[in-house]
Length: 242
Image 1 (spheres, rainbow, N blue to C red):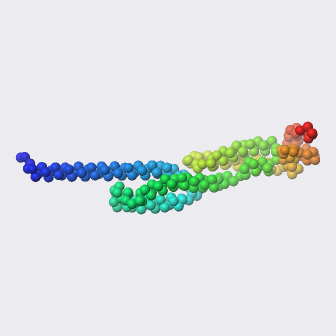
Image 2: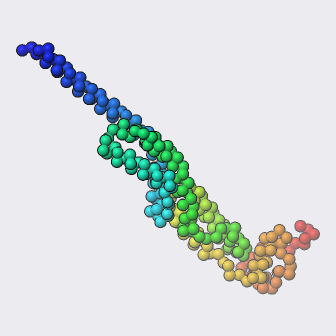
Image 3: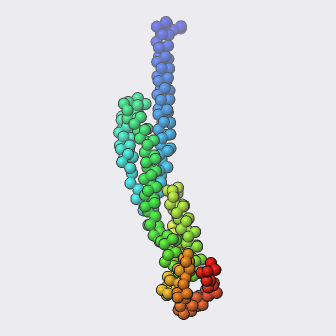
């Protein structure tokens, strides 16, 4: 039996209603996806610093979140609560909160980067608190053993400087720094600070621009140089010939 015109009209209306609902859902999904992409772009720039903060804190390095980040977290939490009640794109875009959140994410990334780096550099002495090579050079006698140890110490110290020029990317980087600090400590144990004062004055003067005067070459110094196989490394040259 052929359906009546009113029945056909009712069926068509139902189909159109379903198509409208489907179209509305598609549009809503599209709107939400655009918002998700906008948020994702900002989070991608910010998230690495959050990961580095967690990494440092796991290694007993305190990293306080900047005030801007704390404010941003509160704004995000408020939006999340509203979205749970009414999960639509319109809920997120209502007012200026959404755009403010995106702007804060963009600005907070660079600020957080500086906070993480500052905390990392401040923690350096927790890994290794030894003197710089320049400081040690002024305290050590210029013996062959000390010179070799200081050269090795300087190389390791430069590597440590490089390691603290940027925040570590992963746990492996921090473990490497710990090994480097241990090597520095072991190398420092090879330094011989126990030399007679007269020997120290002579050796330091030899390295100066003016050289060492003969009155510094005392019998004590000569005996020490011979005992340390360093006597033949020095020659007396008159100033008039330099």
